[in-house]
Length: 270
Ligand SMILES: [Fe+2]
Ligand SMILES: [Fe+2]
Image (cartoon, rainbow, N blue to C red; front, side):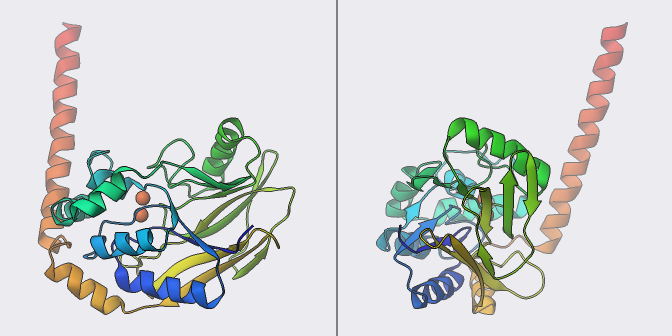
């Protein structure tokens, strides 16, 4: 029952990762858990993977980790994510790829405490509302009976959901949470990487004490300007004109598909 620092969605952002780890270590964490998406979006995938490896974090794979080593395709990626991941595929060292290739899809870090990246059964599912949490609570009870805390990432938002029977409640946004021992919790520690967030850029993470059954959510400043400049110079950012072009091509493809399908239906009806 070690005091556990929980981090997610580092996305190659070394400056934010260093800030999160410094804050967690200052609070006396005894071990670290990482919910995946170590790479993608930013320019330090090898450096971040090396830190995760060297700290012996209890880690699982995120969709960006899987895509970067071709364990998953680009099918459900937004244009800017796919662009940065193509760059990541070209950039990562063999050692990083070997590490990402062997990451498990989920893990139990101690009895009753699970790590998943997106949803319980779908690494790319966004758990962003109470009905999705209710569905995933049912899957969690089927797949991992006895689980009482499920840490998840992917949606990049600090959230605490309490589940009791069929009732799902979202906890108020606050720094400290005293967890109830007879309830089930879905907890997102937030995203270490804040490069995609509007407004203040803060590295997010959590401190979980499985002995006291408490949770602390942290939000920390880091040198976001340095991360952004490096990512732009190193080719991880899709230019605004290119984003517009991708959007136009996407709309034209959708229109062509609609025209093709209606023509096909008319031909079959004849
Ligand atoms: Fe992510
Ligand atoms: Fe993700």
